[in-house]
Image (cartoon, rainbow, N blue to C red):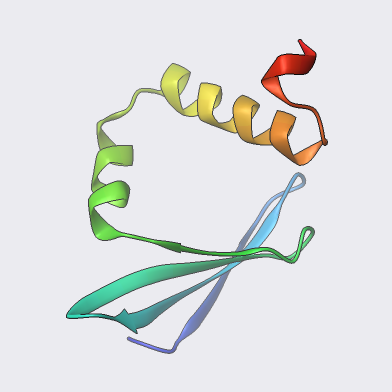
Length: 76
């Protein structure tokens, strides 16, 4: 499982996923195809995402989209 790469995509985004060793455990490495950014996600964060409803998840996406566009909360 570790090291295998998966592609997840739709008409708005494309990401590559890979499980990588980190400390005494693993992290999910997410590479954005469009932005070419890489992030490591802790299992605790992933578990917390499962607890959020669609509205809360969409708020996260909206905030990340604003940051990605170069604007900051102070601009609004």
